[in-house]
Length: 323
Image (cartoon, rainbow, N blue to C red):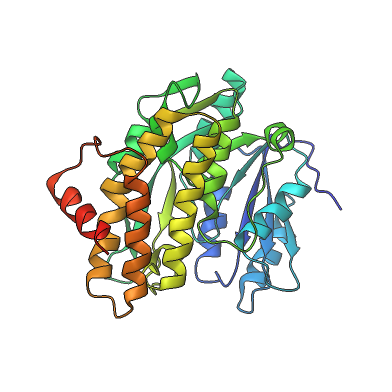
């Protein structure tokens, strides 16, 4: 079965599992787009809450929405792949069902691709954090996101703009469907942090891509702590996280993009590692420290001792290498 829309320029794949508390708001952010030539494939990954009803109601009320349901839970990567296999528009994007598009997100990303012919366009994003009053507040664009997307660059490459490799999330981008088909890129099923590897494959394979400084997504940090990125104190999640980062580096390294490898290593040492070390110091399982220590030593062994870090990151990296 395939999804068709005569008017749509871009299909947005919206995967969701147990997101009834957030899905209406996510879909409203699509409805509020400044350009309306989009379609959406809503992939319900066998939810047991009200997610299915929310998706079904949206599809019944607006022909731009189409519901696809997994009978058994298969995970985020599989849900995205299901959507990719159904797209027939020239362009495709992703929006997790607990996040929000800004009103001009598609106008900016699709419009840029229309002008450049690049393989994909990536925009900036901000955190949407609990405000302590049962609501959410948007944060600022983080420095590494700004470095990846600001200033605007058109028809660039990862060798000309290695800092783009910091923008690892699927939902900050709109891509040509032909690019996915030409490269055979798919999300690795059964893995957490699957965006890490996929993003670097995209940068390595792209003939050209665009970056824009506009904030295109508000990325929700759930108040109940159930987001994947809020579970890094669990050893299995840590291992998935470290594997994802290593996998992304390997994709860039395999394709010979050395400057981008250095950018990723620097950012991981400066930004990803310090909070993990702080967790590890008091963690009850020594295996957590050993896993983090082995990762840090391997990272350092890539010949990155000349990378300049601030004093705090340097101290924490040194501590991790001893574990």
